[in-house]
Length: 221
Image (cartoon, rainbow, N blue to C red; front, side, top):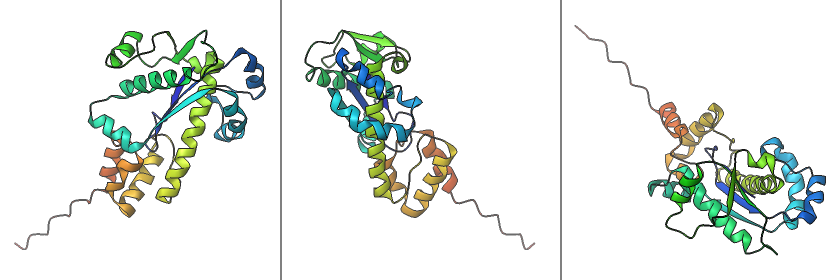
């Protein structure tokens, strides 16, 4: 199973994980109450990660903000980026599996034909089953989502230390307010290092920090 996190967060990386779940470990995963990471609290994910990660052959890819912004400049949209990452993570994970999997499942984010069109210039793994809400339907995708989320949280903690603030997740108005504070205290030049600057949040932060026009001086006539 392969899943990604971070694609809706202004601050922080995009993380993709592919994980192999053998039938022999399904019971142990169920005992850990593994499910779609969006249905687990971050505290629960941090608590089970140490037990989950050693159980599963897996591959994790992290696209930090500088790399993400560079790919956008090269013309990658988010779905193309995700297609490359899923394909690469799956191929890396398969090198670690003791046997060929019965299924390779990706949570569907674009039509199948478009997915392979994005990958036309690379060696693509083609025995993929695309499912909407795959992380809810299959334990392997859920496990991948949990490992990806755990990795994302670890990377966010590094960014928090680097910037000296607790960066909010998502892309809400709270994100804009923290972005405004960062812009005023540290300048806009730091954003490509910590944020996805093609998000609309960047425009809002620029608008919030723009110096208002001064009223015209009254006429003496």
